[in-house]
Length: 499
Image 1 (tube, rainbow, N blue to C red):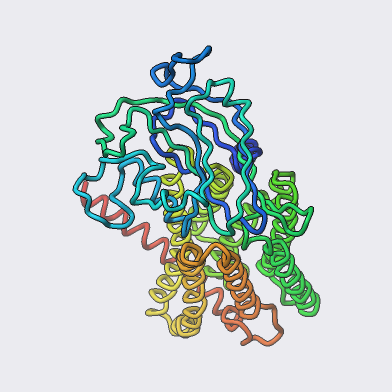
Image 2 (tube, rainbow, N blue to C red):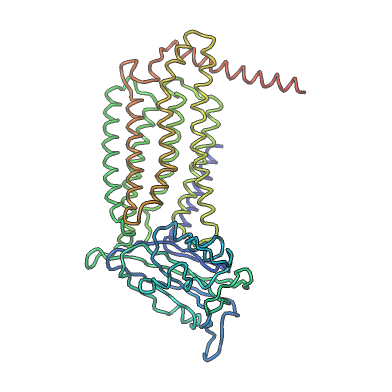
């Protein structure tokens, strides 16, 4: 069963890797009726440039005209194309697209009396300030061109302004060209299909192109630095393991493996970003990165859960509840990492991208909460057992020392899953590295805490788990089994009484 599950997960991961091979700045849509599509954002540095390659474009016949043209061309009065505009933040860029589709009110909270779904053409909307940004925006208009001309059209712009830009597709067919608002629901659906590729970069020197957003170009060096930090931590842990080999448990070896995988993930991510920064293309480093990220996530949650229930330190077996949680949480982590890989490497222009992002974030938090459940359950069972036995009561007193570990785990989950996301959305584009650096600093502190608190040591009272004498450990195991057995008997008795 476990082998079959592993093969299925490996197959799904490979499928996910195949899906993200060419999806960094690439978007393909088929019969899409959205009037405005947000494709993504990029922060240009000095001497920025953007190149648009249109590989396919198709529009309904109603949008074409043959007047004064040998071949059907898009109506000159129906603006269609792509645009890059300066934005304050990624969240603002997403809000502009939702506003353009009539899903929300004006981002500036101005009451214009036209309702939520009355709009003018996206590139002419005064509430978005696009008219004032004409000198800074980059427009790729398709109106007046045939499908063949669109594919051959040279589309290269220089971005002289340093800053964050958002890329949009706009379709203003059937909208008045005099600037009068029109209710979007009254407009006919005009499905558009296209396959486009954006090349966005800026120059660091005379001949060095940088394909990473301005403010993120230092991430490869930062990840290399933290990789060295985790390498030092791994060497210190190996030294401690060999020094106290007689007291080493299985969990200590798993903790060493976790640190090694974390170190490898950082080095691989550094190589991945360095390659992308120079070429703008994905490589095999991306495949190895998502493999190590998946392994790191599984190992991290597994080690936290095993430390919480005291496996190999307090007891040599796992309860049936612990096993069930492991069988649920660890495969879920694998699936979540596969989905994260697909989401992160897919353009935001795809339908339901934001919905899937929200779902994955919620599932990730739920998965984290599931890890905390066996920790609380273990204390509860030992506390119930300690009420009838003096030696177990002393064990309960000592087990209270775990509250620090639980608090640290909760704080780690809260910071990495909530606080750092808020920080990433709040900082400006040129400070994008702050959230990444904060995540790695929190990880370093968390790993150091766990390593120090649960390190193998000769002295019996060195760690919360090792303070238990062998006899007390046997009592705890026996009481835990009795608690589970009595719980099952009570459930069967209650079900018998109901019947």
